[in-house]
Length: 146
Image (cartoon, rainbow, N blue to C red; front, side, top):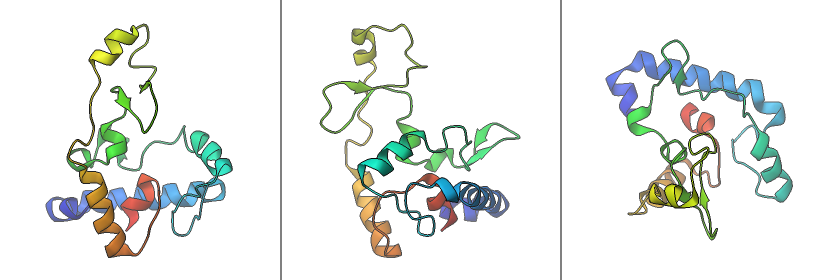
């Protein structure tokens, strides 16, 4: 958002406006603290999050153009949506079922990617947590507001 503020302040303002509207619209069902944006980490919250806002467009998406206003600096969750990614201690690959419909396990495995080989996400998260004083998982909309 900082880069977008410099290169295109008007577009950055639109992204923030969409993010604020998104948060306001979904606050009642947010599976965490709707004020801070920090997700709860209990099993019930995880189950609620699995279904949370599935039908909502991302606030970074410009619905008029169909383009992501933050594509060059998009979050990790966006970068790994679709391609097969090994997640945590899971033995299988997490994939978008729409992208690999009908593909064999071998074909899917051939497309596997390592999303953050240099562990930059952890370093960035640490920097942001120190800067904001917030710690925990959140959603893109809350990250865009700050």
